[in-house]
Amino acid sequence: SLMLTELLKLSLMLTELLKLSLILTELLKLSLIDTELDKLSLILTELLKLSLIDTELLKLSLILTELLKLSLIDTELLKLSLIDTELLKLSLMLTELLKLSLIDTELDKLSLMLTELLKLSLIDTELDKLSLMLTELLKLSLIDTELLKLSLIDTELLKLSLIDTELLRLSLIDTELLKLSLIDTELLK
Image (cartoon, rainbow, N blue to C red):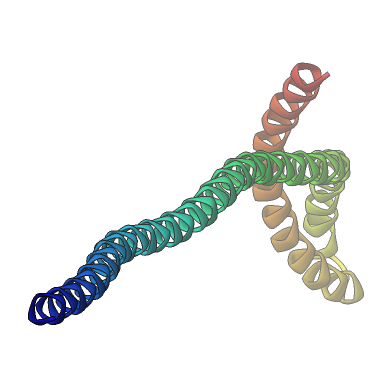
């Protein structure tokens, strides 16, 4: 009877030990699960870091895209600047051509003026002839008082004729200028 009692106790103890063993086994399994969870947590942390890196790379890609757009805009602006430079050159050329056109217009005016001066020169020549005639009349006018009055008028005309003589000299210069103008006209043609 005592032996049975002892055996029973031992059996109970073994049962308890078996339960403890099972509990330890479960605890060990839980420990392994925790270890795996820790590993998964580390993996997730690394994945999160990689995700953040990808986000930064995406931001950098967007920045590079914007920089590329700006570079293209700068290229277009450079092209426009070159076009503006060419337009400025053309504008300067047109300005020079306009100046030349104005010079031609002035030369045409001078040519007309020289033509008019040539006409006046011919008139002055006729006036010189008349002046010589008036000088002779002045000599004759000393005879008569009325002729004397006329001679005084003729004296004034004589002064004018002297002015005309100077004009004649100028007209000769103008004639030379007219010749030069005609040469310029031929060159212009």
